[in-house]
Length: 431
Image (cartoon, rainbow, N blue to C red):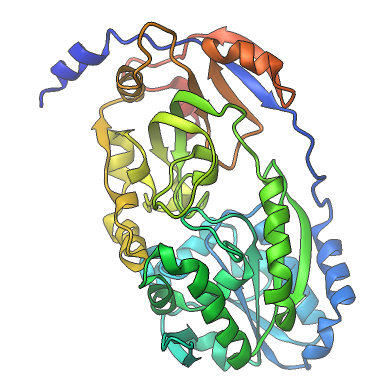
């Protein structure tokens, strides 16, 4: 279709003026000294007795953009070295990174996990070994190199999952069942669909805990500003007992968009480093499966860009209604599709309507959002990890001023687009 017809249809759409608001909701104070916090946890949990000098210890690190992740991993490496152990890092991320050894190493690099930064080598490969079978016959598989080590530990953030609800969602048990299992383990866990994930995650994790030399998990809980406020060393035998309460705590700590109903959500960027679904559905209200719910009710969602740290993985773009040519060009099918094939849920990798510019994509969302006879209610966020500040349309100002968790920090002003129709502040960030 010639681009001219798009301008004919969308140029007349008025883009509302936007005000900037700050989230002032009280939240847990972040950990200032990560090294001291990890040291204190190692002492309190008394897990040091589980390691002997000279033992090789595998540290599993996932693909999520956890706050201060490199500092956390470096502190853990330091503690293990102080015990005389010889730690190494391995990617514990299922099928992410295009389900290749080099791709997963690159994901770690994007997250700041390099040998120089954390003080330990990285050993990445995709081969797994069966450690046992679950009661239903499912093969439980773990990373071959990790199993060959004298002990396995791992770092895992605990938070609500984006595609299912259960006693164990995103957290330590899931890291064991899926992350440590590489692509083969992830595929086995997802094979029955997300409707069965609440059952499969603990089922597979329990077998792995009984059969593999897993010593402990380092649980990370983040506050509403996506900063670690709690680090807990959870011994292997306590993981299944303690994680449910930690999940409930994490749910209460999650950030939220203050409005329950609005017409259009504009997201500047998505990425695998931000959420497994590019943008966290717990915040956007757009879920890839019918097995999870929550968040705001939004008529149309517009995604403008793919962050560089996602390395071409555009998983989650399919939950949007409109996107840009810029994002589509950045999408690497080889890195995006393996996640969908492994999870058995293809919708999140399907391209929505692709528009030539930011302005046309936003206008398309506004044109189709059914805000007839009134000003549309529009929210724009940087990404679902950055909700300290965001933009709202003038039509939401009255509600914002009544909302105790928000402070209006700039009066409404027009969105600034360049000659190509792209947001000037977003382009400045990209350049």
